Length: 202
Image (cartoon, rainbow, N blue to C red; front, side):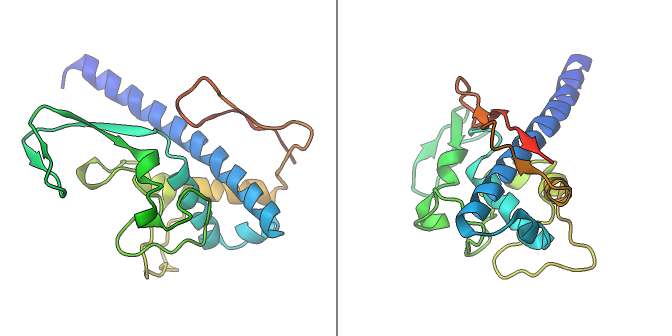
């Protein structure tokens, strides 16, 4: 690999790791606060069970993928399941936000935050946010932890909760709450669903 490409790839890993973790941390915390307010629960009740909190994080990742789309270029002619042919060299854009809200996969409430959602089969509770197959995100296990599918039970000996779940748990246990006097603001000019500020109190 040429040096300039190596530098670009290393820089991308640092950027991707920090950007996606911060993006996910704020969205998941926001969804947790909103859900608790609507369900008359406290954040402390949710984080007391890290398996439950991890479901909140994965559901937030489904609704708020770090990137709204993924691009791929066909290395050979590919026939899709519906019979369409993708010729070699064509670029395909996967709309992650659209795919992650597919009602035929995630249910009639696919556009809503539902951490108690039941998903059949081998579909990730985070949707396509981490990609899949040979293109799956290298940081998935670090950020999201062990992703359980339908019917799978966590292994109490070695289950990985992921850094985002553990960070949120620590922050909530230390008393983090949204600041009622300073509402959070998103970056309106960005095509990405990102926060500009999210004021909190301890």
